[in-house]
Structure formats: structure tokens, C-alpha cells
Amino acid sequence: MIGKTDEAYLQQGMGIFLKRIPHYISFEMKVIPDLKNSKNISEQQQKEKEGELIMQLKGASDELFLLDEQGVELTSVEFARFLEKKMIAGIKRLVIVIGGPYGFSGNVHAQANGKISLSKMTFSHQMVRLIFVEQLYRALTILKGEPYHHQ
Image (tube, rainbow, N blue to C red; front, side):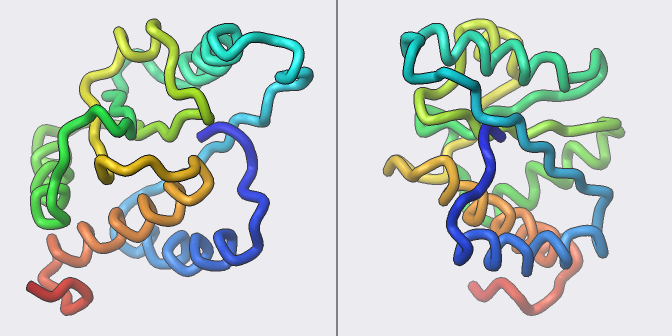
């Protein structure tokens, strides 16, 4: 993800789920710092520079999925099954990326294994962090048959 989470309420909410997730899987959240002088470069240049930083973090055997409003929409149960399939397939590291405010560069799109949408609505990239970690936690509890998710 690009840039730090500024709002305390988002940090607090994320903290709840970031404490819970490691009980289920090995999980690491990496934050790419905001670009310096981003006001002096175009949106496209910003996407390209962010894309270079994202790709530096991707390993050769990693599967890369983008959180993108143009991606496939999944229910929470479908997302849980998606994760389960990746775990069964023996994917060493699944990398799910939240882009910056202008989205992803063409290079990042080209190298991605797929795109997932949390909604057709657009959320701030900081808000998406909280929504995503909650959905990840929810998916893991679904896979374990725990009572967090109600149908």
C-alpha cells in the first residue's frame, strides 16, 4: 500500500484485525512511503514511480493481485474460497496491493495475476486498508468455521 494511514480511527480499526490475522496465517503489511514532491509531477508519473516501488517488493514466485474497482467482485464467502484455493495450490506468497490515489501503472496491471474489487464504489486508499484487513480476517474465520461471519 502507498502512504501511511493518517487517521487515528482507521489506525485503531486496522490494529484490531492486524492483531487477529496472525493467529491464522503468516501476514505482513508493507507500506510504501508517499512520494516526495508528488505535487510537482503528473498523475501518470506518480503512478509509474509508485509502480516501480511496488514491483521492487514482488518476488519472482509471488502471485500479485490488485485491489481495483474494475476487478472481480466477490462475496465474503467467495473471497474465503479464493484464499483457500491459493493456500491449497501452495502459493508461497500472495501479494495483494492497495494502490495510491491514482491507481496503478500499466506495468503493475500487466504483471498482476488478477484484480479484486471491494465494491463498485470508490473509497480512499486509507479507508480500503481497514475494509480489506477486516475482510481478510472475516475470510479466515469463514475457513475455520468460526462464528464471526453470519449468513
